[in-house]
Length: 72
View 1: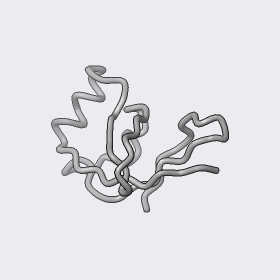
View 2: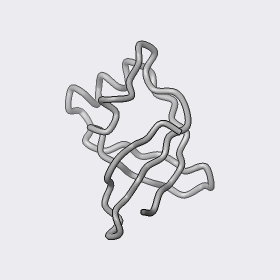
View 3: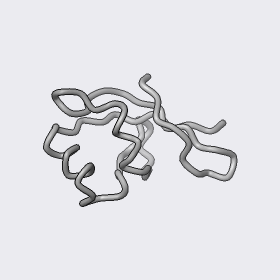
View 4: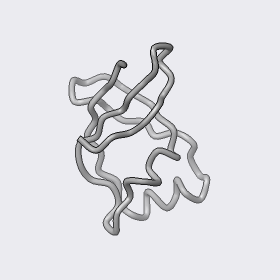
């Protein structure tokens, strides 16, 4: 399956805005410079007390649709 590695740094307040429905999508830049977009709902399982910080892998299906976000 295709994947893209990204670095995310979101504060807890930024994550709360996604939870509140103010945004449906997260725009990010991959480690190799590509722009990527994935559903904000993907953050739910990785948000910690300080938000989201680290390197993650976005996995897509063969049609290019988002499947999952993995901790790298």
